[in-house]
Length: 61
Image (cartoon, rainbow, N blue to C red):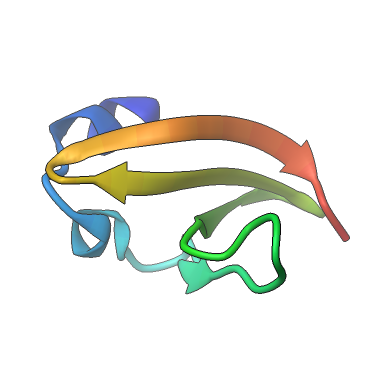
């Protein structure tokens, strides 16, 4: 997933089957997206221009 994120130029580059890509809500995570890793664990990130930034791995549920 990190390799794909590094190669992607926008959020749609992370929209692969099974990854359940979705935007996050809330004041702190507005503009961030999450991709499913396993169980409740998600990789979260946002894009600034063509770069992924603020990448994290979290159980946010």
